[in-house]
Length: 149
Image (spheres, rainbow, N blue to C red):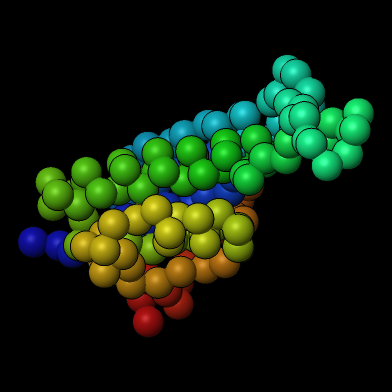
């Protein structure tokens, strides 16, 4: 039985998941995701101005409330969580034995944060690059060292 490696290629707004069953067997698309809200500007995500708070130390002053996490960052976190949940469920079903993450640096960090420990333990390689725009053949070339050392 061949060892199955899943390769997740992602940025903040889209992701593709590929299956590989060994050196020189190619990449086969398993799933793809689109999350266009991660690309939107903050003004498009928020329909209202930030709230105001009345403070007793400055008469008439009403400073704005700032978000702890920006709406754009919240969308990226939601997308990373969706991907991590999918991978965790697939791991429980023994769909793959190894996982390679290829993502833009910020999303790679969010994915690592959201993956559960058993799924994280299956990571056999990472590339901190956004290769969502490249074709399968070019992606295979970029992954050659990680997939078949």
